[in-house]
Image 1 (tube, rainbow, N blue to C red):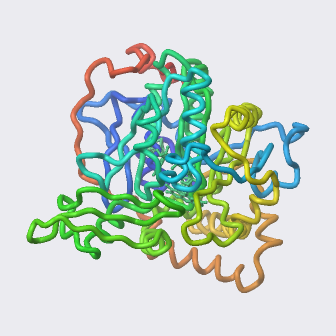
Image 2: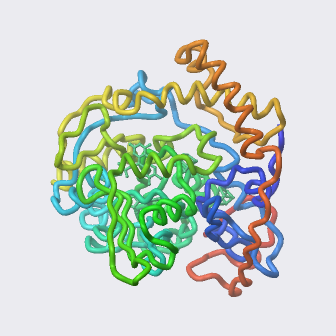
Length: 446
Ligand SMILES: Cc1cc2nc3c(=O)[nH]c(=O)nc-3n(C[C@H](O)[C@H](O)[C@H](O)COP(=O)(O)OP(=O)(O)OC[C@H]3O[C@@H](n4cnc5c(N)ncnc54)[C@H](O)[C@@H]3O)c2cc1C
Ligand code: SF4
Ligand code: SF4
């Protein structure tokens, strides 16, 4: 098995998720850039100091380790092996009808974040929004009120690096909310272990269910197919929301410089985009936010009626998440439709088979010498035995061999060629000082 020793090796080994934690924890050395064919990736700055090891300690690309107490009496034991820690599962939605409509599913992520800001005195929400200058890209934002949150609703099926802003949480005047992909939340949790300030100021983590992130080139190819000849012709781009699940909606200038728009269903757009997911998503063990306080997803356990109002599946994964979920319900920020643990497996039935498939995939990759993430506390082999028939077992093994060669996984990812200037001597917001930066110990003081 390959041992990954540096952040650069994480990327070269096809294991980077693009979370951005390395750029926040070692800002003098790393900056995130969008590599159009890959995703957001760390680039070493000009004249960068040596790697300290703090970023690698938080990097989720290399693997994930569960450390929750499986004997906690509040956990739902029947869900643990397939879904990680779960205290409660409900279907519900934002009570605020604007948030419910604009939200990706039922606006639960935004409603929970707003509850924390307005009723729990939390300082801000670190999350992701469209870049106003280049709307086919994402940027990390720190929202402080309802208007800012409402403007950033909706899933964006494009690369994002919300952990590049972790220093803003650490430097905040009070607790904050973090919203991100499961791997982003896992990175935050790992960084917290070495950073008292980050741990103290993280008031709630929300992860959304995630099947994978398509590259920017996928978005641009779809936009081009629909009429936007160049990236610069895109005025606005929304992937879903404004209805459930909502439409992929493109606003662009045509070749005669007239303003045009194009729309397709969420399902049509995902069918195109999902073929361009980054490799790390194919070997992901956590598609449902197992390291978050609260995870949110789509309640796909039933057919959606045309023009149905949005609805969310909401999973409390920690005692803190359980308490804040109940408080948001009590305060009228969320409305509950059903309280039923079986909603989770019924909404995402294919993920159980995916766990079994992952065991085969990781085994073949290791056998042929490719780098793999290191997982502990995840039951994979039992699902390989129980969930996959003989044909699927053979298919998963052969499919991985095919992918190893087609995606050139035994070869290092080539350097993107991007360059970024040296960082200013004391990074904005950061509490890291020169002495901390030079130490080799994994002790993060952001
Ligand atoms: C890449 C991706 C993959 C997904 N895969 C699945 C899936 O497999 N199964 C499933 O049920 N649902 C999936 N979703 C949808 C997700 O479940 C819903 O977005 C979730 O239910 C939240 O809905 P909401 O209405 O509560 O969110 P909203 O209230 O609309 O809030 C959405 C929040 O997500 C943040 N956000 C949006 N895009 C990104 C991004 N790219 N990176 C980080 N943060 C972002 C926003 O900043 C906002 O805070 C995926 C979404 C994305 C972006
Ligand atoms: S997974 Fe995150 S921390 Fe690891 S190299 Fe990629 S961006 Fe950096
Ligand atoms: S599929 Fe997994 S690795 Fe990929 S973006 Fe989602 S959480 Fe991260």
